[in-house]
Length: 478
Length: 125
Image (cartoon, rainbow over all chains, first blue to last red; front, side, top):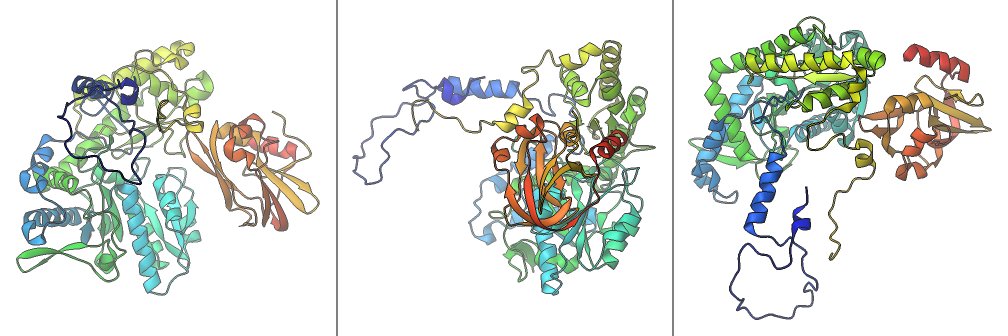
């Protein structure tokens, strides 16, 4: 498909304006060459974007079981609420007294999320999960600085963690302690006891973990870190398994981030925008990114706390996204959220159980909201890799699971169906997986031949990473 | 591919060439094969102090970013800048594509001969 720039035709316009009656002035810094923007009619532009849309696959097109990403359906009520003129027709710089409704809505969203997670307060500033992680570790750092414990620079990260966890530690100028998992893929308590000490700043954990296993020793884990003087950080990536049932705050976590675009059904991917709201216990409250929304008497206002790590995004984050999450929470309600999580876990276990007829599953016993298939046996014995399986799934008009993650499982396919799929869809998907499996195991040469029906076949991933073309260069100009 | 017998090997899959007070470090054939086609390498700077058993650089394949662990403690005296633009050389000839040279070595981990390393890899595979 061509770029808009490549479709450009000299002097083609969407609108023809009358001649400019403002006199041309001589400026010393006036541009000498034209801007080089595409020149197109409205028909061309509309068709271009429709073509892009038809080449895209999203949750509204079909099954999207991207493990660890919680690609759930985004209810229309979210858009309806966040599209109310009282929220959209306002400006971030208008007087605070005139946006009390927005303040109240955000404050309510913060209270609900605090209640769900067992935290004292939330901040909606971070633009995405990794941004929330960074803000939280900056809070840890500031907390230790104020206590004069500047030797606390080491952050423990299990080897099954999301790549953003170690990246956050590094960005924050702290030191990563990589903790190998035990054979079940969980935290090894003895290993943890061995690495904590007076230089421990904290631990970063997801629970359930990246393999979809609930860390049953979680209270002991957070106790070991707290006893060593460190803090516990909860990566909210997998909250969809436990929301409304169990609270990270009660597991012993001091600070968390929530991917509103995962558990709370705001748009995920395609530019979202995302939201990595963070929450903390009361003793860390003053360090939250500023400003905070506070209620005094009957009115709300922004307040900057001394001790805050400061502002980390313009204004107050992606507020319309926070409002979508609020709409979702209120639509589901106190009774609905636990049902959501239970269905997410049920769907994953149903798929896991049926797929285990053919595939080797890394998780032993029940899983939480996701599970991991390992195709190591097929890759070694039949030259049928996880990538081949994923490519064959694309051919069937559905999204493939996450591949080759977590890193501790070889030839991994990570499946997270979420709660928003019905049994009929799951059965159809499972039957498709099994039929691909049987076909390829019968005739191994097929393995490398998929996909056959997609717009592009197998792109050269290595070439794309080694020689990326990230900018269009106009042959005539610029 | 044969692992050259004039080199020594670490259990983290680095090779070492010892010449007087200086060692040259790279990653083994087995390591690059496990990682897959490399697309990026991040090297330390000359003068950096590196510590035995701790990462001194990272390599990135299409699948993942992986740390490379140092088999020695010492000071980096040279880096192979060519790899920054041409990471594929690590896949093409891992025993020619050296990463760093280290001097003022204070500590070296227990290393394996080519033969011992081959046995070690068979167990790992």
